[in-house]
Image (cartoon, rainbow, N blue to C red; front, side, top):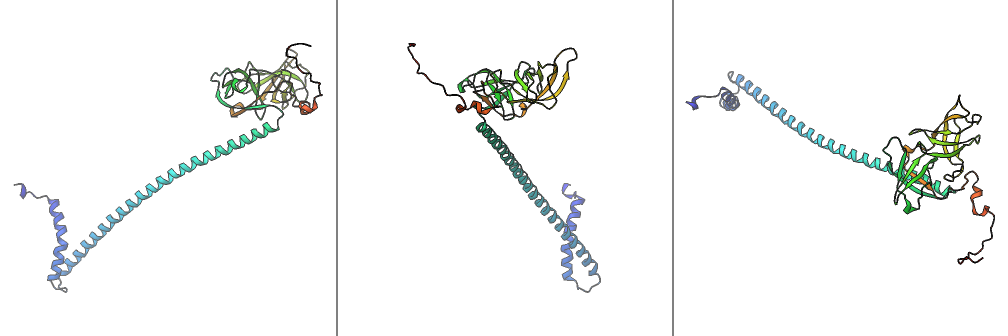
Length: 299
């Protein structure tokens, strides 16, 4: 029958559990100094010691496991707090950089004799063949086609497609861009044209013009787009054309358009001479007699 079928494992467990109780009961019933009680007492001590060690081990493992869970939770919280502090630190660093940039722009605008309109870059031309930027200033802000665009470092380009609230800038590295310029040291005159995304060149120089690597090329002011004497690029390579009378001069723009965020549009670039600021001051101009206008046209 099923109730007579006993599991040996269960029987062994019951016996092991009952032995300490039986031994304790026998310990009270037999004299302490009887020889036959010593093996039983010894066995009882071993079982009790083993049971105590086992229970202490289980208790220590459980305690250690709970401690590890607590440490894991604290570690997770510390990681979250660290990430939050890093994000705040990055935000503060961005604010510091932006504040320094705005401070430099404000100093440049205040110290410049030019009438400047600040603008921020909001887009780049996705077409690789062209070098253009989109800014957040348009005809609503007084922007017109042909106005020069500069940065604190140097010339950037000029407006060629103004919209109501935005405008597109043709960078001086674009192949369709031309800026009348001179070599600052030797006054050799040429035209800066775009060559690639990062370089431009100085063309229409005569073979005997004095141009060296490292020379600074500035605007001539003759195109009435840029004021005279504003930095454009530095000479990186000079080669004489063996079959002609000109020179091949490669340039690196002073302003790195890949790192720019804020720009200026020059509103009064016509006939503005940055090499002689005194000539642009109102008190430097000779006084002229002003005659009242006649709206009817009668002399």
